[in-house]
Image (cartoon, rainbow, N blue to C red; front, side):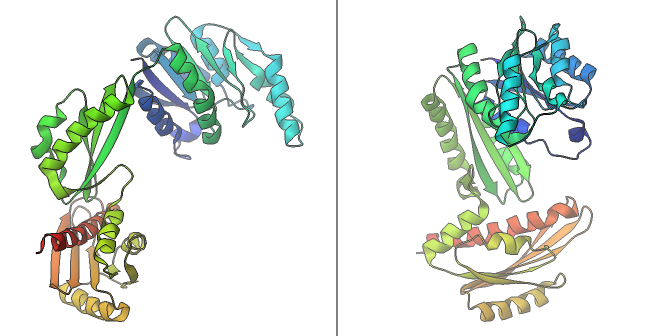
Length: 387
């Protein structure tokens, strides 16, 4: 399988003024096409540094994809930088200039002289016309590999990648294999404990198994390389079955499924309703509970509540919303020592659990909400086990 690197270009990326979403999109599309991505790099709007990054990437990878720096202004240096990197001059393409003029005419505008710069590409490059923007893209083949330069505007980049670049790569590298991934979501189990149970699977070479920790939950990513999608899916299914056997209900969903969605499915299955009370979470619990089937309303306390006050508030909330269950979360934050009280009132009784989180306070509301929703999920699952 060929290998690839991505170079995102723009000083605004280095300054943190915008977030790079292009790398994530391209990475997933490369993965699905069976292309290994080994590195991503961000470079500012400096032609010499871009050229150096391209040259270094070509020494390591078969495919180098750049995004950004194809605009008409002086600080859009990608065309010149790529030409310098592969040792050729820029050349003017009249047909690209005609496309640019037609694009501007479509919007009732006239291009300025600096837009003419966008009709220059490295000598010998394959031009990629841009029907959804004004910046043409291009691909340059070299003895070491291919450099593909795409616009930085996500909508334009995605369109050109799907309609031109991906078909070109499939043909150029005779791509037949695929790389598929499936992500299982777990809750209520720390990453270290999870690693103890599935460490042997993490040492597999294909499929690979990796962990990604979030506040209050851990994802398990299974990635398989195969000659066909069906073969990759079969490899993933075998490992997933073993993970589910070992972890059981610790796994609450996969891929795009959410913890609140899993809770909602259980409430719907049992025909139950619930309300919530939060204190110190900044609306995080209310926001996510609002997406859950069976949710009938909630409240936000002015300040965190200790156990007795929390339970008293929950009893009032339960009566007011006429909910079968009521969930309460009170969060006390401190750097490296966050504490959450999670209380639940239901026909089976009342309970209060205390959880502790050593992470930064700004992550604590998400962590506390995940812990609370998972407690709710576990209690709903217990109903299914009751004779």
